[in-house]
Image 1 (cartoon, rainbow, N blue to C red):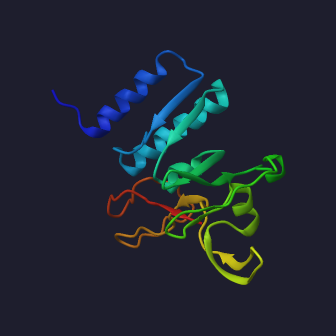
Image 2: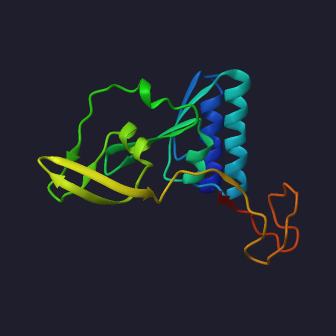
Length: 179
């Protein structure tokens, strides 16, 4: 008997939980799962964290999975570019900062500076004199919060106050949307 990718993923998660670990390292734990099963796995992780004190280090490309975490670190091209989450005190971060400009002119800002200026986005440079750089702009991207969609994208069914994971009208998986 051959297991599907989703079944293999669930077996791997179950195997990791058997020893009652204090820390679980999870590389794309919901990668092979459908949206409903993914949310069930994340709900299980949350329950294990809150009731049993299990911590998780999750690697993901999914903003939805990243939004599940209390704290997330964002990497781009192998560089740490931002920290997201609640109760992040940028004043607790070290005071020395390094600005990295690579050979293509790409600038990598320290995460606390990036948070203070509003996060990743488009910025204009002003007053570039005597080795000083002034940036002006607005944040155009964020990790955001996710919630269940109110309207089914397939058949336009209105879920109202329901927490249904599947559309009762057409049976499609209810998506999560960034708010």
